[in-house]
Image 1: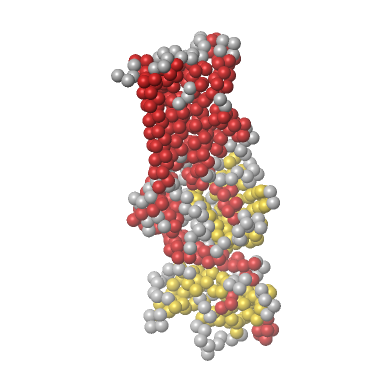
Image 2: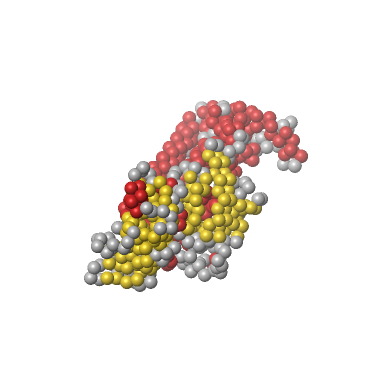
Length: 365
Length: 226
């Protein structure tokens, strides 16, 4: 599908200044024109406002918006929503209750010229596992099924930008777990840039390639996921479950010990997991509190994963007893949360070489 | 034979009047209701109140003003005369005009309510799926507001069938032109023809009951629908 021309400077440029009474949002963003960009922040931080502005659902004067070379809004120019080649998934599925699932799926698709259709029905249906639901009415679906249909409906409009507004927030934990794998597949199999609004760190870790942190209407950070998660100056780093997300390539499987080996620029990690096809990209998460540091490689420890790294920076953590250490392991940033006492004992300072002992690696798949 | 030729004429004329009126009201009431449901203009209040006036005004008041405006010295009367249309009072078109105004709230209000209860979301969802506002209106709004249209049609039709005061003021009592059932009953009673009055009045009673039964029945069904 998505076989259009691509070049490396594809980007989404968005400049908005929005004021609603007490609330104001100022954003001047350049986002990658490919992959998943998470707009992350607490409720009231302006994520949804920004997404709606990008969709053209709200019209804000003075804004600028360009999507992969196409200007959607600039000065007097304002492309109304129905002329923007986008897909939008609302927090509640918002299917049309008077139409069957199939007619809902067809709604956007049949309004496209044949040449514009880049996603076919069978593919979307298969991707989201909704083949058995086509003849049903939306009110006969579960919340999770409804949301999957809504995602497929948005995809079938062959969007050049997919906007998702907390698509999992209205679902309970079980339903969320039911949909997340579909979203991961979407990310892997379709070449459609996605702006994904969420307040869930877990969804960010699983899905995002690029992270925008919004705080009270301001952009606190915008950058590649791994880099941004490892920044010590952001509230994401300070929290107890701070950590980084690393993408690794499947290097092999040790059947005897049931361990999967993943290579990443900083070295190799082994995870308790079944076999996967070699060369496959898999994400794993390393939490700061699961990383300890030593000055030599200790092979008398039960900790399996040890990678050499260099201390890049040290900052205060959320408690007076701890500090956060930012490490560089072959270009991959890692975070370690250690005690202040250990820092002094090991005499850690930027530039020092250490071994990062990773106690837990969580595979995000 | 309980119905004389005059009675039949009155029944046919009533159906014709109610049918024409309802059709016109659906045609013109829909955009008014849509505007009232969506606008943020300060005019919403005054226009909404004007549409609702026939609910509270005695029909004679409305009839009186119409008679004056449409009459030979009234602004609309002079207009229709200069256009070569003659005068509207005591004609069928005049009666239709009066009925449209008089039954307006019974059509506009259910439609407005139906439109308002849709909310923004279906419209937004349609826009994100490439549907223009017109397209959205026909493919999403109309089907979703169908119960509102059913109610509006039934109430508009039934209310027009049931009017009397406005008809008498603006239409008079001209056989085959403006003498509708309600006026015919009045005539029968005045002439002490109680049997004929009974047949017509009984017919109206049964008709009205059936209409309301159908209306509430369909509402109960649509609550279980979708």
